[in-house]
Image 1 (cartoon, rainbow, N blue to C red):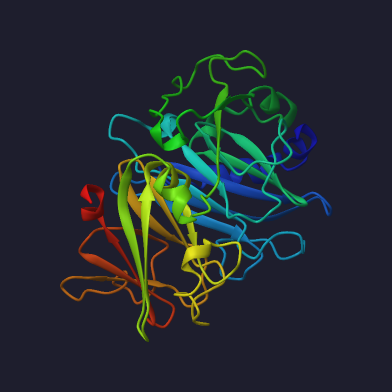
Image 2 (cartoon, rainbow, N blue to C red):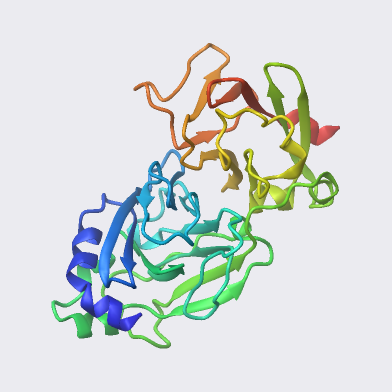
Length: 329
């Protein structure tokens, strides 16, 4: 990782410097060809979570087309809402494998399915290294790449008990705190968790107290109900036509306008959200007043799930709703 950082230091620093006041930059380096393959910035805002999709599909936010072992929709990078008491040094983000079978790796673990980090980190996806850099991180890097690497935090790994969403935000020390590669108070805390839950009914019902119910309806007839337990809500539930998505919902998703991996339903902080995983035809929220979409004619990447909102997938033949009344059932 050091050699990649030093070789591509200028591009890493430049991308991090273009971030808004708060957020995370993800810079992909093609290790086979030793070049920058792409970058995406995910902003942290006070009002809502944001996310980016990494994969080999042209609709992915970070498009990595040159390695066939990368899934079309491989990772979701999720940035929770920015708490008012935190600045850029308090950014946390989550990296989630979309149940690809190969996952992603770190310098410590070759195969992981979910991590939550509070500072700079690097993960590997097939032939790519992805540097994840919170806003402002490069501000105190010296001009010399080798010296800058010495200020790049080491990662300290812990296993999530409970899952990452149950952990409090960790405030990193302010700028000016002495940093070093080992034993620094600014080491990045990396919490290793589980990836999207495989939502067979018995598993979800047994995954802690129910937090709500997903109702999936095909306009041509047929409805599926899935009671979502606390554990599954925290890990995430994957919806779509592909066999790697949650098996109880495949019948309702027998519609080709729905992508094979279309939607990740997951709890972020204290809210349930649906993250469109770079689907071909989009996910369209329809509120009780009839309002649809994001207001500019494009489908949003992240949508809050509320009892008054329905999500129309693809061409609208499949609808997903969230029912919190099921908690008391």
